[in-house]
Structure formats: structure tokens, C-alpha cells
Length: 495
Image 1 (cartoon, one colour):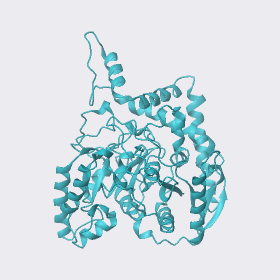
Image 2 (spheres, rainbow, N blue to C red; image 1 turned 30 degrees about the horizontal axis):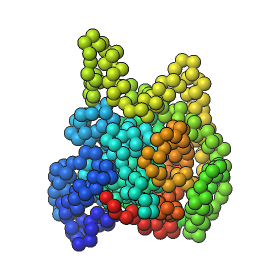
Image 3 (cartoon, rainbow, N blue to C red; image 1 turned 120 degrees about the horizontal axis):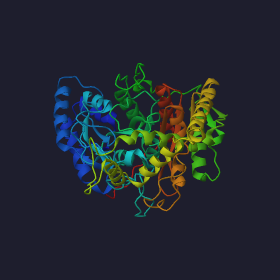
């Protein structure tokens, strides 16, 4: 029998339905692979017993001929998603010991589909980071290596554990969340597909919040077809989430024809930035040529407010974070600091938050509190909100002018070494999000597709940005790009 962990989600689904193997057999193959891959630190809470129970139940559904797309398919769940009775810490010490008595809407929907949960995946603390180096569990490690070097590389952030697990065949697919690029950047760094849907397409209920107007959950998968299958399973209206859109969910997989003849693809001139590596520029050019060869029209466009996106994002996101994270005080759940005799309630708050939050979270909470404070609210936060509206208008005008999708680089570089940015100015780390934050600010869907390797043998991704609520068309363009690029590379196993 072929190595079951190498199968795509679609192949696993079809193999289960054809009875080529069983859900328990598939699950055991993944559980063995996970136990052999501790060096990647992708899984931080393994749930083998839950996985086996769910696999057995899924198999009964398959035998009865009642098997949805994900029935019996083993998945990894990012630690940001609440899972009933299983630690859900957002990779933070302040939530140490928290086991929610409920599931997030997304995980509940996946369970109803019959998906198997293999465990919880590593991430940056409260999703704040671009390298998975802020996690209380320690760094997740990219399964890729630079040539023959032994340097451990970042899998990207914040969904670094999800990206590493999918790339290393430790799950058929994984959930991720994207606030400023946290699905698309790690997908590009690890040679997989990641899609951030339109804001409101996927429920945020039960997902531990970072920045509520920017956060959106999405799938991280081995290819575009898998992303279409899993996105459909994750999507849908949720009355428990006031930002959830009451719109029908299309069959995204059925829309993957690969025919993009007559589509107009925009290339924003503002994304040609000073100092962009030549191989990123070359990949972008090749991607445009691939889409042109497939029958699309390539058109230069302008998104004039792009240069303001990063500063606007790093005002809005920390402001919302400072509000959301105020609830973690040691009173109701999670970690509580030990107090000295005579300490009062204020001391408990201060000590708990000082011990519980890592340096990056503390930095962003302080920035957010500052920009929301009296005297600075208008100067920073309100101005950033106005810039956000202008960025959204740029995209609206481009789409109104006939653009069907926008092609850009996904990241400004390939994966860098863990620790290599340790002494850099924090703004240098934030620049990893330079191509992705505009999509969150505008609430648009965006997908990263692996499209080539750099000179050191590391994967590089291209990003496609679509019209709001048009994920099906966006995925079809991504499918065409994926087929043209023919990216088949996998990391050489060293773990």
C-alpha cells in the first residue's frame, strides 16, 4: 500500500469511499508520522485517542454510504480554535490549563463532516508574529532546509505549526487563521496552498481573538483542490457571529475548471518595491506569463494607497488586540500569578499579565493602548481607519474597472533561519507582511500558491487576490496557476 500520508485530501476522500483503505488505517498512518516528527514541534497537544474514536465513527458512516467530503480525513487544528475538552491556549502561558467546554463553530462543522482531529498545532502567541518564534511551546520548525545546510528555518507565522504539519505530511490539511497574512505567508514559506476567505465567509465564533475586524479562518492544504474542498466545509452563516455573512456557500471544488480565458489579471505597480529580491520579481513575472498563456489578459493597475497599508495595519491590529486581550486577567480562567501577602487585585492583574504574556504580545498591547488613549486616538487610530477605507476603495475601483483577480508576490523572501531576525528592529519582522496586509484591511479573499524554488532550493509563493465573496473564481484562477507552475517539490526528510 502507498504511504497514506502522502495523499492529498481529495485522494484520501476518494480512497476512503472506494474502500481502498479505512479511516482507522489512514489515521494510524498519520499518528505514527506525527510521533516520528517531534523535531518539527508542529503538534503541541496530540489527541490520538480522540482521533481513533472519530476514525471509527467515520468508518461506520462510510460503510453506510453517508460520507461527506471530510469524513474520515485526518486534520490538524491550530491552537487558536477552541476544542471541547482539549487544551486551547493560543500558544500563550496566560491560557495555561484552559480546556474549553465547547467547540468553535469551525471545528464543530468539521466534526459534523466526520473529520478526524489529530491534535492542536503550534502558532505564534495569540497569532502575533511572522515566524512562529513567539510561542510558549517553542519554535515550530520548517521541514524544508537551505540546500545542505542544517540551519533550522521558520515555517512562517502565525500559522507556522499548521504549515509545517501539512508540508511534512503530518495531516491531510489544517486550519489556520489570517489577520495580516498568517495563512498565506507560512503557506508560501513551506510550499503549500493557503487561502484567506472574504471577511465573514467563515465564522470566528470560538476562535481566540487577536484583531476582530481583521481575523479570518481558512484552510491550509497540499493543493488548490483540497483548499476548495475544505473551505466549503468551514464556511457558512453562523448566528453566534455577528460578522458572519448569511450567504450561500458554493461548491468551490466544482468551480475548478482551470479555464481562465478572458479573465483580466491585474499587476499592481505599487508592489514593485525597492530592494525586492530579483528571484521574487522573476517569479512574479513568470506567474503573469503563465496566466497569459492560459488565456488571461494581464493588465498593469494602480493601488495608490498600498504604501500606507503596513503602518495602518500596525495601528489598527494592536488597538484591537489591546481591547481583546484585556479579558485575560487571571480571574476566571487560565493562569494566575502567585501573590505575596498584602497583594491586592491590581497586583494580581499586573503580575498575571506580566508572567502570562510574552514580549511581542506585551509590545502590541502597549502600542494598541497608546494609540487608543486620549490625545492620540484621532492622531493614530482614526487616521489609520481612514487610510483603511482608502485602501479598500483602491481595490473596489480596480474590480469595478474589470479586474477579475490581482497577482502579487506572497512574501518578500523565502523562509529565513530561526533566530536570524532576533536582533532586528521589530519593523523589519513586520515587513514580512508587506504583500498580505492590504487583503485583510480590505476584507478580501487571498490565496497563496507555491510556484517555484529559490536558488537555495526553498519554496516561493505567488498571491492571488479576488473580488469579495468570489472565492470560487479566485480558486479557479489559482488552480490554473498551480497547473501551469507544476510545483511538485517536497522537503527532503531529515526529521
